[in-house]
Image 1 (cartoon, helix red, strand yellow):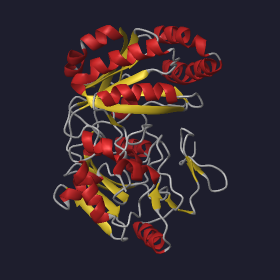
Image 2: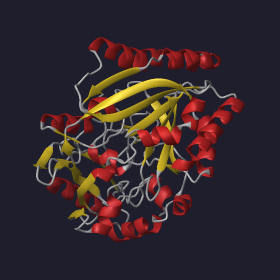
Image 3: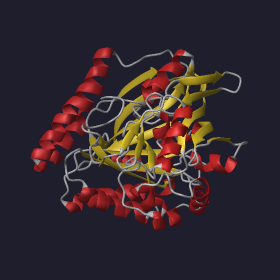
Image 4: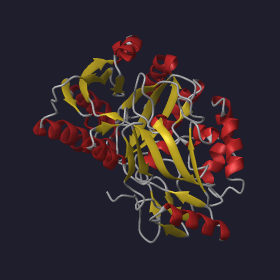
Length: 439
């Protein structure tokens, strides 16, 4: 895939293929100054502005019919401060390039999501996260931000400088300005041992609090139409390094997770009745495995099968109930769900519109193969999530609006007031922001 999802004749498309837009013009600034000039020019021409990363959001959060800013020339590490243990990186840098560059320097982020195709600014602005008992989302690891605001000026913020902007802009949804650089906290490179093993869903739910408490990073995948899950625990390790062997890695991560899985999705699309049988087989095809490697090689994996996704954060205490309701809904509904449901956690953080803002959270993600009708499944799942005051991932499919968010985010008004101050003319507005933040 090219660095940005895109289409012919000036049409922009996202990775999931469910969102497209036709901007009046596309700009790829090579410096912060050029970006600021593009923002000022758009304002003069009466056009809205949106920055877009690799198009990994399933919502239209980055779509615009105005000026689309592509950050592919704003990449690379600006500065590594070994005393403060921070690294400052240009906003358009893909996470996979950041991870590899940090590893070469003997450094690493503390936690990360399960894919690393996204740009650092796209990932953080939408609240991308992995799973962690103490360590939170990628945005929660930010120590400083630089952004171009609506008047074309460059604003920097941190806990000490413009702290009220810092509180909100770490997960800013593209509503407060265009992020140009991010300073992350880093630590010396470490090893993680991953232990993957199948486990019955009933047992995972019964022992969830213990599994969560005993592991630095716990997650599991439940296979709908079965009582089976695959669990994954990642914990720090003194070594030695024992990466997944090349052949085993290819077989498990490429052949099973991408190849056979892709074929299973095609079969499921053509013959939905076969889905439960396929689910039984694929949930049993997994065997336990343990491996030890540097963080990004353990946390992340390639995802080549295209899908559409909805994910909600519910209070961690509500997880077991939420999943039981989801399971009985799938059983009652006659739906055929061929994609596993992914469950992760995050500790409470202090970012205004973080899905984990002020509360310990569990994430439940439902997926559908790209091109299959997902409406019925997602609508039924969303009904369950919202009954638990769920907060949807900003970059994934949901139908919520500002009225709902004002209820589930105690600091929602704080964010909208800051937006009124930084972007009174709504230069960075689009349909999605109008819906989720109000006009």
